[in-house]
Amino acid sequence: MKATIHPSYSETVIKCACGSNFVVGSTKPEIQVEICSKCHPFFTGKQKLVDTAGRIERFRKKYEKFQK
Image (cartoon, rainbow, N blue to C red; front, side, top):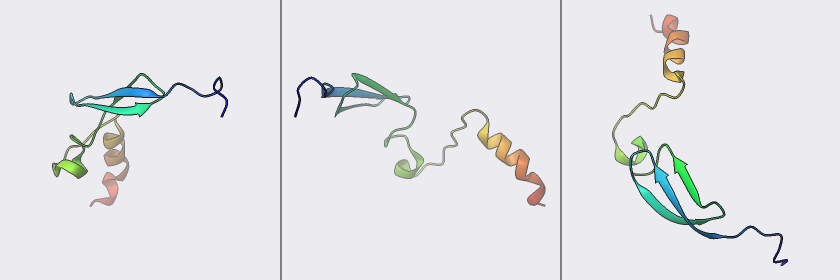
């Protein structure tokens, strides 16, 4: 294994939009995410719609004629 071609691997802080922080190993010094296991609806059991760039509204508008 050549020492000069591999990126440095160290502990990384992952910051979520909900305020949670995790420490994992990675080649990046810091990672920011929007949804983690503490705020994701699958793990919490709560229904929470995450609308990025109006996707939900575009979907509803596109398929509203099929709901009748």
